[in-house]
Image (cartoon, rainbow, N blue to C red; front, top):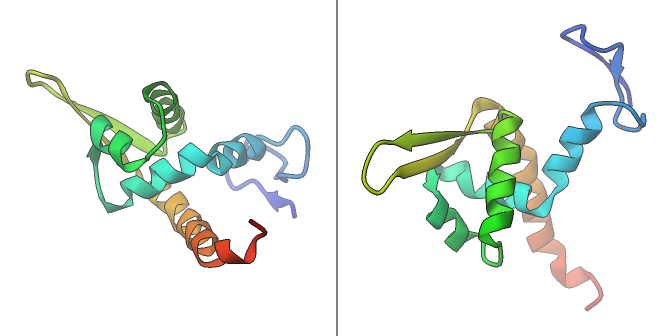
Length: 119
């Protein structure tokens, strides 16, 4: 379903069109670690170690890559506090919080329906 571009940067937005930039955003949000990271940050800012403990199974390398992609896409901010050792916190932006809402619905759906899938 195509929609018009509010900013005028594109003729229209259509995620089914091969060259639509919406596909890149959809791919980012559909990534397991991106969706889980956004969900983890819904309750407020977290440090890297806190995120890694919360997101069981994510490697430091993958978490770092995920955080960088989300920051580059303006979905989260990285704040460095001058201290020894360095204190870095990650938090959702307004755009990130708006993405968190539909992602929370998908996570809830998955948890509620997991038993309906074949083992």
